Image (cartoon, rainbow, N blue to C red; front, side, top):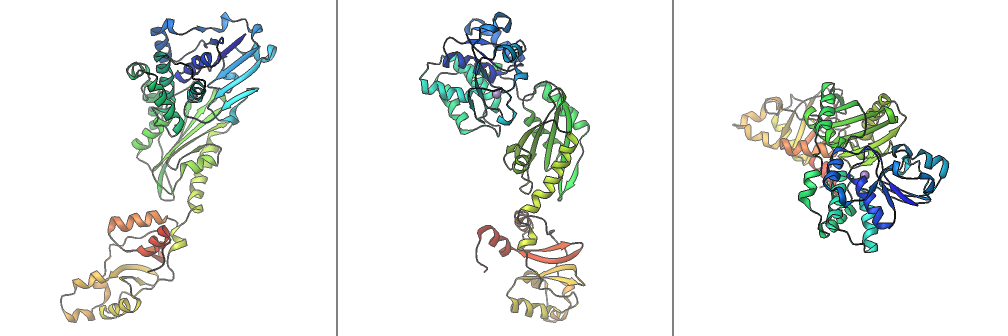
Length: 433
Ligand SMILES: [Mn+2]
């Protein structure tokens, strides 16, 4: 006898895979765990007779010679399959989209890829087989696909998920029915967790960016934690937000991050702790870790993340051609002409006093003012940058303030200058002008 089963607290992706397996392996009995998500329960009570689903109690486990596991890769997530694992050891086939490192099911065959939804992998096979998919099956499959990918908006969604969604729409998946059952991404659970997070929201400065790292306990499976972190970042109004969700009963930590600044790349930070993602969004799943050391590790990585990329220090000009505040405007004019530049910092004893540029000469009303000191005409609204910032940040400041150069300041002293052409050379690898 051949059975297929999926994880407890079954979601739509799990149920979709269960049904898909009965199409891929005809004659297979689908065994649904006792605990299923409320929206899945609602869907099944509405479509009662459309699907043939058994419960563990209906099955003589000793008669099972083949077990197909879908949408999970852990024994602990299965409902009462311990006897099968320990006493009968059937042949096992596995279809899953969770990270392979977490897998403790020893399957003789597996399809394990990081698609946004597990059903996507099974759609691939159903397409190859040319299996007929009924509209109601297509609707269920698409609901699973949309639930796991946030309707293809989660960073985990892949091109193949989108193609699979297109295929299911061709098979007449009904979006109206789907919408009725698909849990709203932001439901009561998510609301409660966000509220908990905001109650103890803190913030810190890392490399001049505001960062909030939040440790929160959760229990059971919670969908859409990434949406919660996304909202948390917006409400806490920080550049980078990281949620460390502690799952005590499973001894697991789910780490989810969001960043809106290029200098802090969440994807590469998550990769260095075994997860993944993109510059703006990423996550990792960690086993048997202390959440506080995860937080400290994240802080270290964010500090270090910036050091590894190109900094202003690497591309600035130094030493700085400059003038003292007491020299005359006529002398400044001569230096600007000689150096062929459009502006100069005004520095006394290593301290930046202002910037004098060709534009400032328009302030001169009479010829005699050329004898006046530069401090009378220089601009003192000094926009500066620190040496560890990024070229991108420099370019933004120049555009925002319509300026062509930024003095580089470290410990209140000017250590270099970055001009528009320095920044452009970095971005376009152009030759100096
Ligand atoms: Mn899934």
